[in-house]
Image 1 (cartoon, rainbow, N blue to C red):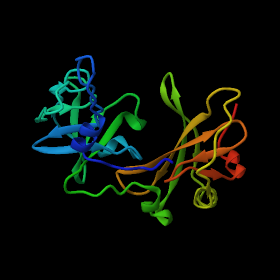
Image 2 (image 1 turned 90 degrees about the horizontal axis):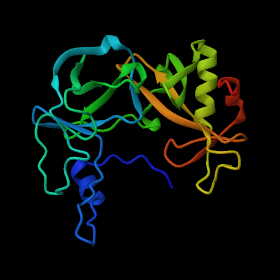
Image 3 (image 1 turned 90 degrees about the vertical axis):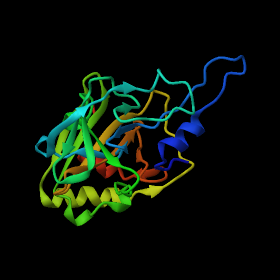
Image 4 (image 1 turned 30 degrees about the vertical axis):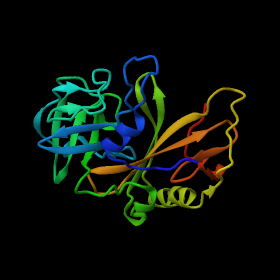
Length: 233
């Protein structure tokens, strides 16, 4: 069963630690975080920067990458630490969003990965949080290509946007579903839903050659009507 669960880095750190019984180094499963100005910021995995115009002034740079460098589960994170970004990665403010920061990421949609301040802000980018009536545009990306995410379709017509959202809303949960992998792994797509906010809503859709499915919470099956909007080679 797949669920979107946001945990603090401390909880994930402790849950992800395991000691080598032969006396080797401890392996730590880091959550994607950045520590800045005394606050912990967590990556928004179901969101994407809506437009580069929302990137504000540079705040500084990452000073230390903890993944692969820290094996002590008691390590106390400090300003400038990041789980996975290399030292020197630029950190930016997000215009109009005092509880968010952005870092350059060539693999991310619109070139930046967005983080929210976890201690004072709730995670509000689940599909259930989507203000459906405010969605103005949909972009569809082929995910995990050599170039990162490759945009393959735009939906901007009001009626088409409404039809596409209905397909998502009417998906049917099926926790027992297993994709057909006889011909390899399913194709991955990223569906980005734009409102007037600085962060768009982003969800993964997969296609196993027969069935389209996604996980807005638990695994759910999508109507094959969605293939009208997703180019398939």
